[in-house]
Length: 269
View (tube, one colour):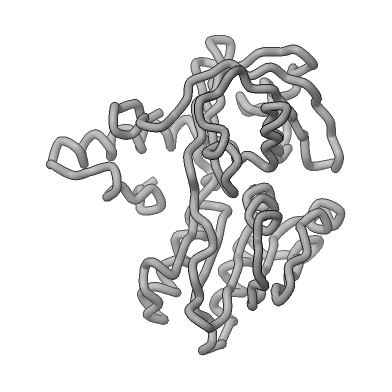
């Protein structure tokens, strides 16, 4: 993981205590954990903030980044969803052992992309199951209608149904038998709407990078109107991604660059 003074600015390194672990859906493990006396309640309460979980020495010192699905300032609790995909990865093994009162170290909060202004046009959303907690947090805080359409790649209909309704925004689920390997990209390339003014996306890194390039480079939307993040990478562990991220970040700073110039989605993996 990246550790550097400017990169760590604003982060709180604390120990969280598990209050509840549940499995509301077949593919989702939901954790609610209590934080100690934190410094900045407002920062933790923003929509779409992330934090890093340190899994500990038993898991090779691995760490993983997750999104705060909900923050309760009165109880100082965060809830987050772990998308289940077998039991072989460090995160799957770690989370399967979680129980009430278990303690784990985290660093956060780190603000992630909000929905860009569409400047009177429409929003297009593209996300898979890993992006649902972020979109849940964003839509729960929405104070005005959001004209647009979104496509969510998730097999579990019930998990999709948890997304809050938002006036003006229509969401479509993509999933089930017959779904291709890159359904969100397929939907992107099939979309022919000159009224799209902004894009928000979260999901598999390579698919998201291609979606971002399509809207920025092919269709000419400004970079500020396209907010897309890669949450995982097909065929590569997040531990490997962290090592590459560290190397690229250190190289950027050595050349006189700044943290603001670091483009995580552009990492060559």
